[in-house]
Image 1 (tube, rainbow, N blue to C red):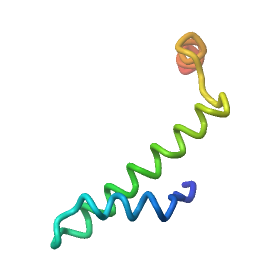
Image 2: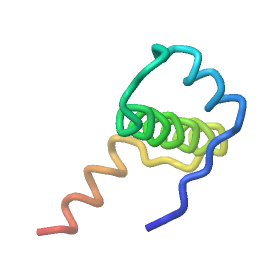
Image 3: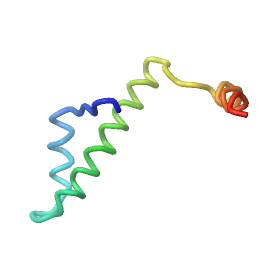
Image 4: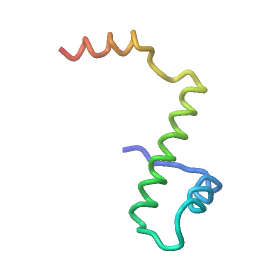
Length: 63
């Protein structure tokens, strides 16, 4: 499993959206989602993704 990394400013922004009292599990879930979205956007910017056609070819190899 890879390590999740997130920007401190992103965490601060997420915290602002939460009420004064909240379940820490809810906040952790939100942090994990935000981290994964940041990573996905970075991968898109770098061109590190498969096209639909490439994905179809990879899936065919599973059979």
